[in-house]
Every structure is written in structure tokens, then in C-alpha cells.
Length: 221
Ligand code: CTP
Ligand code: CA
Image: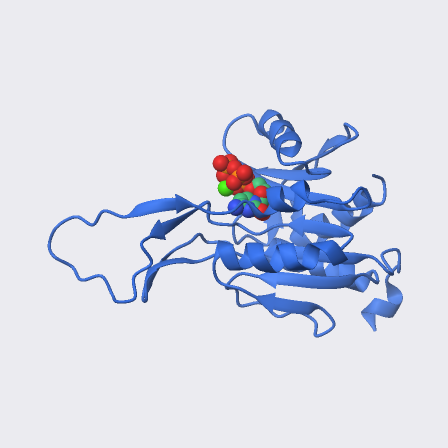
């Protein structure tokens, strides 16, 4: 099949991918989330698997098919994704954090449905754990971390700062308002920056091709 035709340059490499949105429920029927479809993460998981890697995909709520050869862990909230990722991390070589993790979770987490009263609803939010920061803080020297960033404003500058701050080896950044990029699109237009000062802006490409090129960069680190 396809896998036999692919270069097996990631054979023996254990890759952890986070993908999709997270859902932060504030009562049994309502949640806070975002429109991430998991396409970028699934593209990376499949590309790595085709190239021989041992892949674990930690998936927020998405409707995506993944080859059965990919180990899939399904989670709902950021706290669950954080727990799954920190569990797997010691036995991975590379983490690719594509998930659009909700930065906040509404509280309190009610057991019963909020009833409307005709009055405005006030919801208080607590901060969610930062998954990539947790992986970065517990990394071994052999481990590599790739992160993403959706920004408004000076893309390259914000991405350089975010890469440093979050301890990423590679950051992949896109403008949220660019057509053909980001959330739930089949294509992405990204600027890629690594820890050695390599920096490139790629044209609008299918996410499958962005994935393939990123894995090429990984071997250049
Ligand atoms: N990320 C994560 N856990 C979080 C938030 C973000 O692992 N709780 C990861 C994302 O998967 C992405 C990277 O961190 O790879 C950057 O996400 P982004 O939302 O751009 O950065 P934040 O640090 O959350 O900063 P902000 O949203 O305030 O720009
Ligand atoms: Ca964020």
C-alpha cells in the first residue's frame, strides 16, 4: 500500500499529536469551544505514520477518520487532554501540538442544566492547563516539540516570541484572518520558524503538504 511507497525516515520515532478543539462544559448540555476540525493534526498524524513513525493521536471532539495503525485517544476537555498528553510524553520522541485548546473553562461545572431567568447569565472562567508548556517543562534533551500559533498582528514577531516562551523547537504560525488558512480549512498559509533561526513563509498549501514539509524540517533540527 501507500505506506510501503513512503520513505520510512521516521521508522522507530514515537510521535505524539494533539488535535482538534477541546470542549469545556459549564452544565450538562452546554460547552465553550472553538471551530477546530482537527484536519492539520490528522494530516501530521497520517504523514508521520506513512513515514514509519509510531503515532499516538490525542483527539478532542472531532469527526475524523484515522488509519487503524494510529493509536487514538479521545478526550473532551483541556484537563483530559493535558492528562493524556503528560502520560504519553515520557515514551514519545516528538510532540506535535496542533490542538486548539480552550484557554479557559467556565466554572462552576454544574450537575444540572442552567435555567433561564430572563436575566443575563454571568459565567466565571478559570485558566486551563497549558499542555505544550507542561511538555516543554518536563522534556528530555532528546525530545522535540512542534507547536502552532494562530495570530492577529505581526505574525513573525509574535511567533518568534511564542516559540521561545513555550520552548518549542519549531513553531508554525498563521494569520487567523487570512482566507485559506487556519480553522477548519483544507489549506493553510504558514510561517515556520525553528530554534536554529530558520524561517520560511510558505504559500497556501493543502494541510497534507504542510504536514509533509514539517516532518522534513524535523529531520533538519
Ligand atoms: N497549547 C496547549 N495548551 C493550551 C494552549 C495552547 O498545548 N492550553 C498549544 C497549542 O496546541 C499550540 C500552542 O500551544 O501548539 C500555541 O497556542 P496558542 O493558543 O497560539 O498560544 P497560547 O499560549 O494559548 O497564547 P494566546 O492564545 O494567549 O495567544
Ligand atoms: Ca490560546
